[in-house]
Structure formats: C-alpha cells, structure tokens
Image (tube, rainbow, N blue to C red; front, side, top):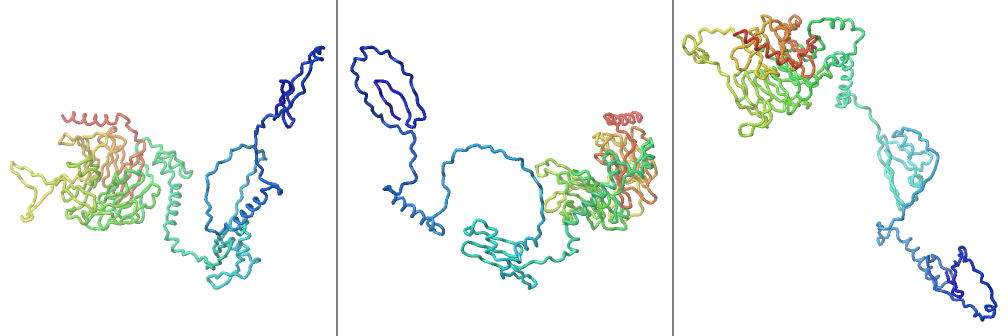
Amino acid sequence: MSYLCWHGRSFFGSISGRVQARREEVQEQVREDVLESMVDPPYLTETETIWLLDIPSVSVSEDSEDAETVKERNNAYTELCKNRQGNDKYVERSMQTFNGALKTKEVECDSIAMVDKAAMSTIWDMYDSFSNKSDASGNTVVSDQGNKADVPDSSSSMRDLNPKGPEQSMSMVSISSTVSGSSTQLEKMACVLLVEEEPDHELILQSDKLKQDLAVMERVILANIFQPKLAAYRQLPVIEDPDCVQMAMGSKNSPSPFLEHLWAFECELTKGRNVTSMTWNKKNPDLLAVGYGQLDFKDHQSGLVCCWSLKNPMWPDRIFHCESGVTALDFSACNANQLAVGMYDGTIAIYDVQAKEQTPIIDSSDCANMHMCPVWQLRWIDHESGLAGEDKGEILISVSADGRICKWVHGKCLKCIDLMKLKTPNMTTNRQQWNSTISPLSPGLCFDFHSNGPVYKVTWSPFCPDVFLSCSSDWTIQLWRQDLQKPVLCFTSGQKAVYDIMWSPHCATVFGAVSEGKVEIWDLRISSLEPAIVSVTCPGVNPTALLFTSETDCVLVGDSEGKVTVYKLKNLTDGGSTQVETLEDVIQYTLSGQH
C-alpha cells in the first residue's frame, strides 16, 4: 500500500484496486485573484512498504541460482529413503508434535438399513478355502493315513490375502497347514491332519457335566409333578389338577383340624431303616438332613445319613454311609455346610455336605476320651467367650448314654472336654441312705426298676424362656416351669411310649408328639385333655421323629420304615399376639387350681 499526497490532502487506495475509498470534492468558487496566482507543480513520493503476509515458495525456477542446490538435496533424500529399510542406523519412534485445530463438519446421508446375516463355517470349510484344487502347485501335506492332499502356493495365497504388498509380513494358521511369509523368504511347514474319533459312550455317561445336566432336568420335571404339593407347603396359590379336584375339595370341607398328606422323602436306600433324627439346615431352609438307624439295636446294622432337598423329594442330594447306626444330627450355624453326626457306638463325625466325598472331614475315633455308649443328642452352641477367651466361637455339645455331657473342640482333630457327669442320686428310705450304684465286685441277688421310664426328649419353649416339655416311655408328656420341682401339666392320650416332642415355632400353645402308631398335635387353647389332631399311621409303621418347619405351617414325621412324610396343618388357626399370654394363663390357672 502507498499513500499519495496532494497539497496536504491524501486518499487511501489498495494496490489490487478492489477496494477504493473516495472522498467527495468540494467545488470552490473561482475568483480572478486565484486565476492570476502562481501554482507550484505537484510532487509524488512513495512511503515504506508494510508486509502483512509472506509465504515463501517451495519451488524454485530452474534459472535461479539455488536450482542446483535444491536438486542435490532432493537426490540425497531419495537415496536415503532407498537405503532406510533394513538399515540399523535408522530407528522409528514417535515424536511429540502439535495437533492441528479440529473442525466440525456435518454430512447428510440416507438412512442406513441394518440387516442381520449369519453363516456357519466348519473346519472343513476353512480347509477347503485354503486348499483350492484349482490353484494347486504340487505342494502337499501328509495326513495320518498316509494320503496326500494338495495345498495352494503360499505366495499366491499371500498375494490374495495381503493387498498391502509384499513389504509386510504375515502368518496364516489353519487346521491343516501353517504358512508364514515375509518380503524376503517364505517358510512352508507340513502338519498332521487330525481325524475325529468316535466318542466313548462310557466316558460321556460318567462325566460330571452330564450328571449335572441330568440333575437339573430331573428337578424341573419333579417341580412340575409336585407343583400343587410344593405350593401348598410354601403357602402359594395351588394349580389344581382337574383329575384330583373332587378329592381335594372333599378334604377342604372338613371344619375340624387335620393333617393333610403332601409327600414323603423315601427311596430304595431308606426302606426298612428307622428314622432316628432330623434337622434343618440353618442357612438353607429347603435342605433337610435325616439320620437312619435301628430301634432294636440287637440287630446292629450300619447307619445312613441322607440330605434331602425340597427340589427333589424322590432322591437325596447327598448320601453318607456310617459304620454304626445314626442317633443324632445337627447342622452348624456358622459353617452351614458342616453336619455333626452322632452314632450308636459313641463316635461323632463331621461331614461336609458340599463335598462329593462320602468320608467325614474329621471324627472322634482318635480321641482317647470319646463316648463309649450311644450319642443321643448333638447341638452346636454359639459360645461367645470362655473364661480366658480361648473358647470364642461355635462349639459342639454332646450327651451320651455313658452319663457324660461333653464339649468338642474342632481343630486338626476332635478333642473332648467333659462338662458334666450325670450320677445316679442317692435315695433315702426309712431314714437310711441308700446308694443305687451297684459295685461290680458285689454279688447281685435281685433287682427291680422304678415305675418311671426313661425321658426321651426335653425341649424348651421358643416363646416362654422358663417353660419346657418332656416326653417319656411312661406314656406321658409333661409341661414344666423352671422354678418348680413338679410338672405343671401332664398330658396323656394312650398307653404307648412317647418318642419325640417339639414346640411349634409359630404358636406358643401348639406342640407335636409321636408315639407308637400315631402322631398328635396339641393346642392348649382348645384343650389340655385331648390332642387337637390325631393321625394314625399304617399298621406296623411307628413314627419315631417329629420336626416342624420354620417358615410354613407344615410338620415332618419320620417312621420306622425309613420314610419322612410331610404334612400340612389344616384348620388350625394362629393365636396371634395373645398366644404367649394364653400359655401363661393356662399355667397360672393350673397352678391356682392345684393350690
């Protein structure tokens, strides 16, 4: 740009002439004195040039002085690029450079139509694609049968599969051949073709995966078959079978309480065995452990423990065989997979119900102070802290016919510590002290037994902490209170020994009992003289164990034939919030009547 001066006036103009700024001229009046005056000629001067943009040229003219220098530099760079590949003097590495400014661009296009397509390719399809007979060039691979198969030329395959050129190297791997190539050399290797053998049916039948799949299928089928029974057990809506509607409706019309038969846990292994004990898993309410032994222990047989699941009432999930008859069971609360088993020969074993092995993880066979008589009851106790803090945690308590109550410490082996020894109390007759213990060295002339029989079961009330029940072979069930030396109530409904009793976990006034040939459900709200429900078993079958469910209004009964039957309590109303008060009122009323 330049500034032009004319008598002190100036105007701005551009060199290109595209933009011009023109000032309007003011016409002056011409006077005679102006016309006669002398005027000096104008002088044009150029100002200093201001550069706004300077882009040097990347090319030079062949006639310029720098043309030869540029040609030499270009030839040197060309030689450098030729000798770069394979030269150790050059190393490729990344450099930190400035990124260009980002620009946002928008493009409009037609909507993209998405189509799903699928294709299946087998091993032989891939083999044929690499072994096209039309491109065979004499290369072969050897199979395990000695036959030869054609293989296409590796260089042609490389050219087809690598469109970037021969400079880059790649490798191809297939089931029949392995070919690797580079820009300088191609290596060819022959491999052995594998022929599929026929599967071994015995291995398939014995595989764990097949057993697991069959177990799932079996549970699905049984869930469909037992749906009405399982729904009634879990207090869910029942889908009635059209063929059994009339029979089901007939049982619902009865207004009095009764036991509705749902199903029974039994299989070929449990037939003829006596159910001696039952216990629910503390963490999984659908898992039931059942111990089997013999009531008549003169015919001593091996014992059995079965872990039944509600998902499969036809066959147990776990089976443990014991050398002696099983007399007691209890699941651990801290380790829900540990099951303590007491046996008739005094042995105590702990099994892992999650393991597939049928051997116990630990037992008392190596303990010098083990029980020498049948273990009649086991119980896991959460012992927070001992005298010195060494007994913190869960411990196992056992009671045996040898008169000892023991604590078992679970470490590398079971260690026994006596907590209490049950001694026969001295009896006073005619002001004389008489010791009932007979010395083994004294000759015996005669003996007799007291009318009271052995106590088979003692159980505390889950609602009243100072009330408990006991059952005995003297045909009676007695209700006790802790601060009294005599029973508050005595229940009897027959002249048979009572083998087992248990409080209901849902109602404080309801408990169940089993005796020879029948199952009784007592409700003290209704009567303290007669049971509310009496269910008679089949001739020759004696119920031996009783267990209530913790989440539903059902009761399980084990019998002398190895069967555990599930019953549902029908038409037996819940006492609600007044059930504890009802039990206390019954006790107070009975005590006031005795006084």
